[in-house]
Image (tube, rainbow, N blue to C red):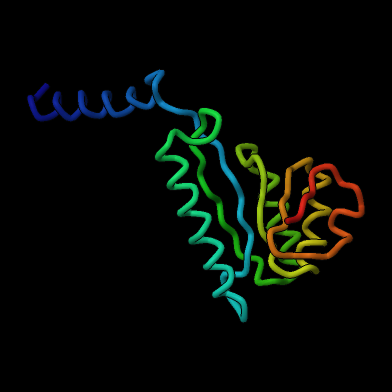
Length: 143
């Protein structure tokens, strides 16, 4: 084996094994669904950048309860039918512990049905429809 190949193999092995080191913090994910295209895209990106900044600060301090947190962001264009599809996509990822977002009431109401069905925690941060919490779904919250 050549020296170059041996060093490459050693570095590759070290890189792979570094992920197995007991000091490596486990990861979890938080979902964010907002309008990143269309009329309200500025609002969606404002929420996205705020969430990224908050998670960056939190992760730099050790994460949440020993977990580093990754943000998964999807565009619902403020459309109820697309919001349902995005909620279903979030529910399929077993590492996602909860979802925030859905700017418009119609999108939030439609998506909340899917989060309830999947048992996935959902926090409506801007949708204000009383019906979101009046239905009594234990997974659905609003600010």
